[in-house]
Image (cartoon, rainbow, N blue to C red; front, top):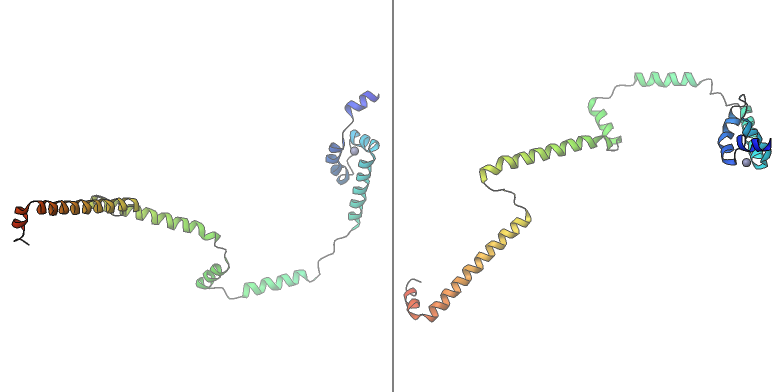
Length: 182
Ligand SMILES: [Zn+2]
């Protein structure tokens, strides 16, 4: 008999804890045999069950206070006042919304506006690009490279001029030839 009981009707404290709320909250349903057996065998769980039962039976005796008998009348008066209040104009209601909103409901509109700006900006770039032949808005890196190129050309021209000067110094004929032109 004890063998059968251990195998089929024994639950541990965790399972009993899971079942405890059902047992306490639905006293009209008979607790399972295993739960009763565990309660009998396990004093801490039995104590927990008793304390829960006492708490809930105490809560059952508690009567929630009734709302004041004037509650409905006051509510009706407030609703009538609100209905009789002058309607806000569209500008006033918009101002109220702007003043009290958190900005969260403007985010979709912002996303739409920014994507529209992107589309317009990209479209104008596409329209302008074929006419000019090269992108009018060069990136910073490209601009740096262009400046570097120009500097390189300037240095080369300076070097050539220096070479010419050197050559003219070495070659007196050319300097005499070039002298009248200056
Ligand atoms: Zn237990």
